Image (cartoon, rainbow, N blue to C red; front, top):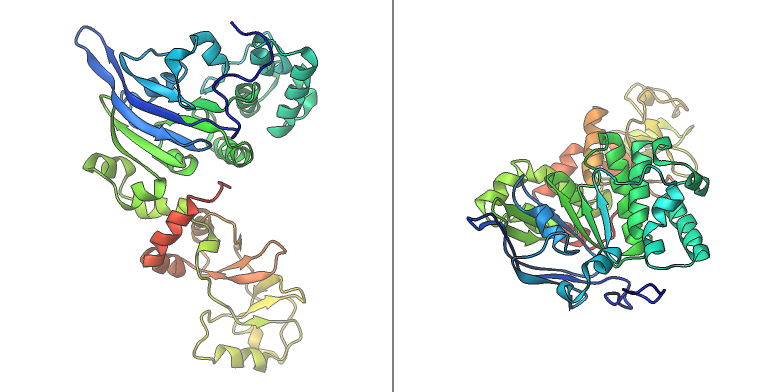
Amino acid sequence: MPTGEAAPDIQSQSGASSVSYEGATKRYGSSGAFAVDHLTLEVPAGEICVLVGPSGCGKTTAMRMVNRTVEMTEGDVLVGGQSVHDREPAQLRREIGYVIQQIGLFPHRTIAENIGAVPQLLGWKKDRTRARTTELLELIGLDPELGDRYPAQLSGGQQQRVGVARALAADPLVMLMDEPFGAIDPINRERLQNQFLRLQAEIQKTVLFVTHDIDEAIKMGDRIAILREGGKVEQYATPAEILMAPATEFVEDFVGADRALKRLALMRVSDIDLWEAPLAHVGQATAEVRAKLADPDVEVPYPLLVDSERRPLGWLSARDLEAETVPSAPDSPLGPLLDRDDVMRDALADLLQGEAQYAAVVDHAGRIDGVLSVEIISEFLASPQAKTEEHSAVERPHG
């Protein structure tokens, strides 16, 4: 068994390895019932493939075939073009990152020792392991000083982040993630999902991600494989393709009746043509503002008060316009303030929760960029442009 510091055989110069299932099959029991039934699909290098489906569909079994913690009855899995059967199982598992829902940290070891466990098994020198541990703690947003603490001294969310760091410790080109955020409360779960997607945009690992939650699959996956009981793949496609064109009745039912709303998770505010509101400045003659409102081409019937840098301050009411000049404190509050990079689903939630008819959208400098409304979103979803934007959205790095 290798103990030196040479790069693992399965690794490539690109920083990620493809994973190919070639008729991978697993049967159990005397009846030979299928847990996974001749699974054939390819996960391109550097992408997240989510395996999703109901309990008993074989998604975890399929994932565990990659590191041979489940042995196939027939078929093969290739990592970087090389059969996993050509690798000694223990060494293969050290070269593939693995994150589970229960985190699996060693309670009697410090955080640094947990992260350095696999590099130690691979024979890394102590200085290299220590440097890698510090690097990873910073990468996942934890203070390196936490390395001397024990898992019980960290919150559940922090422990899960350490679990991700441990899986990345030996710089694997493939990561297996088995419902990694399933045991976390909803608020921290979303935070961890977002953090991992930002991390993935930087490290570009090939990830096999298991979940039973279709919303999580849509958010996390570059591609999604939907499995049904008996380990049959019903559809393997991008999130946008699955939402726009479910391949079977099973997929349509599994995705749910709110497919149109789920599509919003794939788009950003920048994908839509915003409306323009008449702009007003403190001290400006209200007659000028009323003249703008009289324009038949005006899209938003309310003036938006902005400062000298075009940063929104609030909406002007009819009573505000009764004065000779625009007041510094408008009657109507600004309400939701959106960013061009906001996910469309979140923007819609802000509009509905704030009971706002319109929301100002700003650029990175906080300057007004346009106005969004529920009406604009509805019209966009019904337009042919929406399908084009959804396809382009899945090509962008996750945010």
